[in-house]
Amino acid sequence: MKSLSRDKKPDLILLLATLLLVTVGTVMIYSSSSILATEKFHDGQYFLKKQLFFLCLGLLIMILITKIPYYKLRRLAWPGIAVSVILLAALWVPHLGVRAGGALRWLNFGVFSFQVTEMVKIALILFMAHLLTKHVSHIREFKQGILYPLGVTGVLVGMIILQPDFGTTVILVLVTFLMIYLAGGRLLYLGGMIALFIPVAVWLLLHKSYRMARLMTFLDPWKDPRHSGFQIIQSLIAFGSGGPLGVGIGDGMQKLFYLPEPHTDFILSVIAEESGFIGVGLILFLYIILIVRGFQIALKAPDMFGNLLAAGLTLLLALETFINIAGIMGLIPLKGLALPFLSYGGTSLIMSLAAVGILLNISSYES
Image (cartoon, rainbow, N blue to C red; front, top):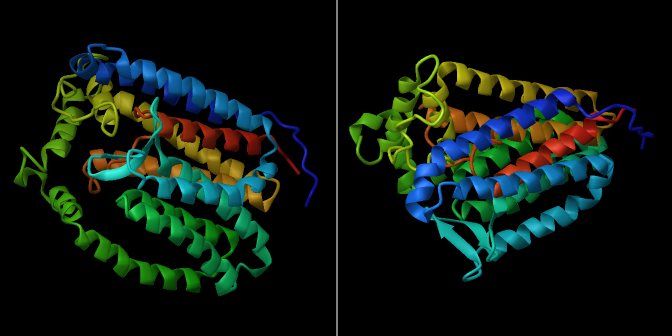
């Protein structure tokens, strides 16, 4: 292994973009949730207080991660997968797993709930970077270049699809394939495996009626505007109502029990209504900066492990951002997925900040 030295400062542009996003997210969580919080908990700052706690915890974890030499994270590759399997299995333990919205995705620890798949995403990317680096000399072989990585992914994906969580499954499979490709995997093998996965994905889509309902709603939300099409229609109304400059922070109407849970999946819709095209444009600009800087860090990483780890984490953030934004704008079927750094949700925020911490860590090294 080449000698690595920490001779550079962490990427300040990436850090600034992240801090701006979480600042906007914190403000908009309060704006979008205060009325809902007052109605449900008699405390308009209920969600804001919880998010501020998770933000402080996430920033602390991000700072701590920047202090650990990133190449030492390889030691956590197998333990991370083992913990992921244990926690995914624990979801099925009575009174420990929490079912919400028809999905079993949260572990109840009394004081707080933990969304397991958010941790699994980071653990899998770390493991893939380690495994592909270890087998780089055999990466073009089917067994070590394709079968081993997809086998581990398949175990985790199989447990996640049972929750069910089709969206996270798609993200993990996409990130795995892209990381194998970046490591030098053969396109012939990758193409063949993708061809095998397509019928499985179609079957999973057709197997559950609610997934087909989402697809039909995407194609024509106005067919059932009061029920299945209600969410996306209200989201589009929010975008249209904002105009170029918005109606003003705090003055939006769609959060008044029109948009369900406006502080989570649909927070960008509230931002669009209250800050308009300009506000949404600035948010998108910050995400572009974050993603571009992430890939630049991957390209400049001093070793293959750092290259793949940074690329995988950036791909994860990019896919989550695209799926959320495209969904609430009606460009793809809706998927209940948090918008990184902006949506309310402790586990998502902490894991996203942890990912940025790793990227900042890698950015401070040179060969």
